Amino acid sequence: MGFLKSLRGNPPDNIGGSSEENSAMNKQQRGNGSGPSYTAPPGSPPPPIKEEYLPPIGPPPSYDAGVGSSLPIPSSSNGPRTQDGLAPYHDWTSIPDTALLPPPPSIAYEASPTSNAELDEAIRAHRWCEQHPLLAPHVPTSFHISDVKAGKIDLVKPREFTGNLSKSRTGLWRGSRRAQNRDCCFLTSLPLYFALTDSPFRTQSTKTIYFEIKVVSFGRDIGGNACSLALGFCAVPYPTWRMPGWERGSLAVHSDDGRRYTNDTNGGKDFIEPILAGQTVGIGITYSIPDATPDFQPSPADGPPLQAKVIFTRSGTIENEWDLHEELDAENDEFGSLGVDGKYDLYGAIGMFGEVAFEANFSDSDWLWRPS
Image (cartoon, rainbow, N blue to C red):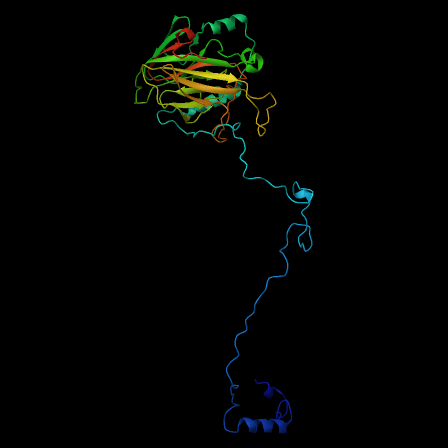
């Protein structure tokens, strides 16, 4: 229903304005049947307007508290400031002294390229170490000290070892085992390093421990796995079904992959060429008082660390060495140098896997390399 028809009565003649106005407008619109026309103004269109922006008068704002500054002076709470309220100048062109920085970390591997122990054995060793913490160093007797100096060292056969072990003369031991033998670790009967009496902090002189091994022969284990021999040092107690270097408180160099292991249950770090049958090799640690303690490295609560250098010899010549306190990888070097940093007694350690025959020499009179 339309709007107009909804109202009562007749529809209005118009809506809005008088009838005369509407009639006049209608006549104007119906004059010739078209609406009003448009005529363009004379002349060409005006040019476009160009707006130019000029820079402000005066220098740009700065941190200077002079005239015309538009920025507030930073407060001292944001860091050290000079008397003028400015941040102190840092000479980035100066090169810091890096002599006290530790060497960069070597590349660590997750597994050995030659042979690896079973995971169950590693888990069992980890749990064993958690239940048997490292023993505190003990005061040696004068007899113990004289025996170590004279090379009167015995090897303690682990119960995992199945083979032959005999002493040829003072300080010289021969051992052999057949194929299909699992990992095991020999330890010396006495520590080669007594932490309470040999520490350079006590003696004010360097201390070197060392021994040599001649590899008589290597066989092949059943299944084609490479046989291996490891030489190094351990703090006690140590799980003797694990090669030295794999668990906390130990370091060693392994013959099959030529890698070095320090508290490393993974794949070690590249170090030397593999050790071959017929070669005589040796391992040693030299402890000394550090030249200085870096400012960025605070001393631990139990005293500053000793400087420790591990050496490896082949045929009487030093082939390679490493700094025990090198920069470590947080992910792969969980225990760092724990147990072998000179704060614990250290025993000589010989690890074996598979068919191996060796001679171990703890008497310095027969060594091919002589500590200086």
